[in-house]
Length: 213
Image (cartoon, rainbow, N blue to C red):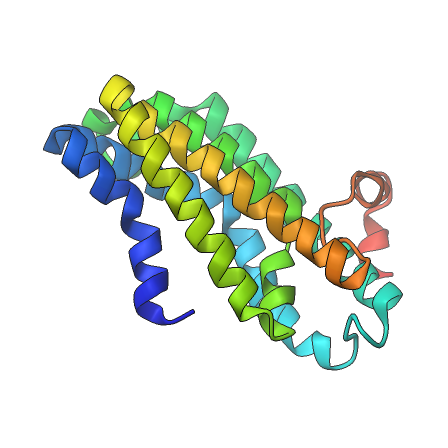
C-alpha cells in the first residue's frame, strides 16, 4: 500500500463531510477526530516496536510463541488505551476545550462516537502489523478499500442526516468492519489471535509484576 493510498484513505471522512456539511461542522469533526486518536497512541507505539520480534517469532514457525507475544503486547498497550478512551467519553467537552478551544466543545458527541470506534482498533491489537510484515500487503489493501467503500456509502447517507455525528458513525462502523476482518484473516492464515486478552489484563491488574514475565 503506497503512501498516497494511505493518505487518501485517512482523509476520506473529511472529504465526504466537506462535501455534505459546512466548514464549521468540518472543523468540529476535525478537532474531535484528532483528540479521539489519543486513545490509540499506546497501540501505535506497540505496533512500531513489535516488528523486529517477528524475525524470532514468525507465525509460520512458532505460532504459539508469536500469539503469546502479540496478545501480551496488545493487552499491555490496550489497558492504557482503554483507560484514555473511557476518560475521553466521560469528559469529552472538557478535553475538547482543553486541547482545541471552547468553541470545539460542541463536538463532544462526535468525540464520544469516534472514541468508541477506536475500541475495535485497540481490541484487535497488531493484526495489521502481523499481516504487513508477513507479506500480506494485498490483503491489507483490499480490506482498506472495502472499509473505504463502506465509509463513503454510509458517510454520504449519514452525514446528510446528522452531519458530523453521521460521518463519525460511518467511520466507527467502517473501522469495526476493517479491524475485525483483519483479526479474522490472521486467525485464518495462522490459526492465532493478535487481540487484547481480558485474561492477561486481569492478571496484570492483579499482579503488576506479571508485566516482567
